[in-house]
Structures are given as structure tokens and as C-alpha cells.
Length: 402
Image (cartoon, rainbow, N blue to C red; front, side):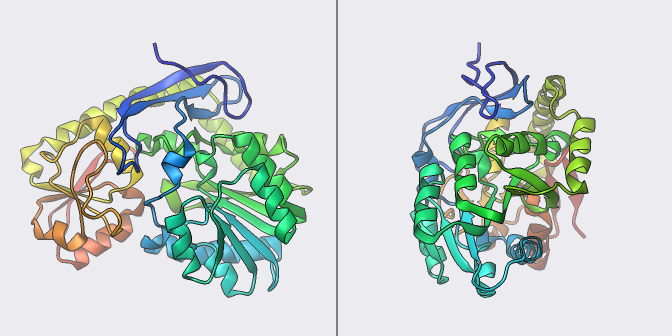
């Protein structure tokens, strides 16, 4: 019998149902941690929030972080698009106060500084804060919560634009996280929260995105409920190309929702995102998907095979399907901090692109499939003409490169 969450992380209900058991897994970015922990997915019968039961100490997961936003060219490109949209929606001008929660290496904050905004980043990872400061950004090394927001408002005042990209799923205290948003944002200001959309996780069978860092898998409805409990209203919704399909919700203390809010709520209702049976069917489909992938990994016609993208999501996938160095001789990753290490759990060596391609693989399994176009272009430019295999989204897909 699996242990459910003590209560729903958004609505506090004690009525949750098991959706998927991913077994015992190491932290997805746990390169220094050999321990494994249960990883189980549940759905709240009251509000529909999809969440894991397990909560590892946040200091263990985030105080030294290996994902560096700036290593992705597509993320760098989107950072400028995101800034331009925010400038238009929030009416930002030089001198406006902009704060990013979980600012990473400063890739998304720097474009705001470039147009003269007063910028501050907040991130608990000192290694990332060093990178951001090298770009001239002010960074506080701290976790976001109500106490941080109070210190912020007392130090620099309330802010004009506040954004948190792909971090709300990391928050073990969602109530404190949302309370901090309300405390820090000025009346008339605008906030934005970006998150991997549960609809894409559902329809793309993206169980590889489930790991201990991601405590929740949000919909517009569940994020809106959380924000409303703290006096914040979702006023606009847009999609983002990052994370395999994300939503960006814009919120304020007093605003009128535009037509996009009702439209996306309708999309979610039609998809059954709040329905436990919908997610039970997802869990069963994930088990079938993993078995199909295991067969591909042991297919001699595809060997020798290597991976591309030692992402957190790849580690969930590799451990769930039982991959070892016998299946993938190595994994390419362009983050120097990961090269020379072993993927947590599977023990597969992580190498540079040049080293991986020099092994002359017959097949490349694209593990960081949400950056597939970027990675495929790199491999083709380097002369790779073998097989290209992706496990997500939806069903596994193989093709020969011209």
C-alpha cells in the first residue's frame, strides 16, 4: 500500500488517489546523492491537482543546481520574446522594478536590465547566482516565501513586474509561495507564473517530467485557485514553448480577466484535467509506453546507441525503464558541469558532444526531447547521419536522418 500525500498541496483535501508508481528513484539532479526514494503520483479528488506524495528537503535539491538556462539557445531566444510581452502587458519603462523568482543564471532577467529596468533575482543556488552576477545582475541567494517577500518590500519596495518561471512546482509550501507574490507586488502591478501544463503532460504521456523536484503538475484551474486564495486574479493566459509545453498565467491584485482565461478553462474542462479517471488512464498508458521503450533499448538493430540530453526528465525515464550503460554507452550534454559524471541511478557516463559523436553511434536517443529541434540541428551539423529516436511526446518514434 503506497502512502498518499497527507493533504492536497493546494486545497488541503485528504482525498487523493494513486495514479502512477515510478518506483524508487534518486533525485533527478542528484549527482552527489546515491540514495533512492519512492516516487508516486496522485490526483486530488477535490480540486484535481496532480502531485507527488514525497517531499525531499529543498536545501538538498536546490542549493547547488546543475540546470543552467543559458545552455539552451532556444531558451535564450525565448527570454527576449518573454520580456517584450511583459513590457507590453505591464507597461514597463526604464526604472520600473522587476523581480525574478528562481532567476537561475540570469538568462531571463538580463533582457529587462538591458532596457533600463531595476532588476533583482532571487535564487537559492549560489553557483547560479555567481553566473548571474557576472552579467551585472543583483541576486539574493534565498528561497521564495512570505518572509523573503517581506524583506524585499522593506528593502526595495513593492515591484512593478514579478515573474516565476517553472519554479512553482518546486515549492513545498505553496501557500507561503503565493502569499509572497501578494506581498511583493504593488497595487496595479503585474505578475507571471510559468509552469509545465498538465494538459501536455497528459496528452504527451510525459511521465519523464515527474521527479522529486516537481511536487505538483498544474493546470490553469489549480494555479488560479491557489492565487485566488491569496487575493490574486489571473487576468491573461499564454502558452510557452519551454518544458515540453507550458502555460504562462499573468495575474494582478485587481484586474479583469481577458477572453484567454475562459478559453483555457474550457480547454481544460474538455480534456478532463480535474477528473481522477482521466489520470488513472494516463497512468496505465505510461506503463505500456515504458514497456515499448524497453524493447527499443534492447533492439540489436539500433545498437550501438547513445543518448542526448542528461536532463532531469531523462533520469526519471531511464530509471523507470531500467536503462544501463549496456543500452546507452553514454549521454551527450552541453553543460560542462554534468560532463564527466554518471547519470543518477542508471550510471550512464555523461560526455561532451564531440566525445559522444566520436563513438560512432548507430542511433541517438533524444532524451531532452523538448529541445529536439535544437539538438537535431547540432548533430546534423556535426555530420551525424544515423538513426534518431525520441520516446516523447506520445509514442516512441524512430527515423533515419538524411
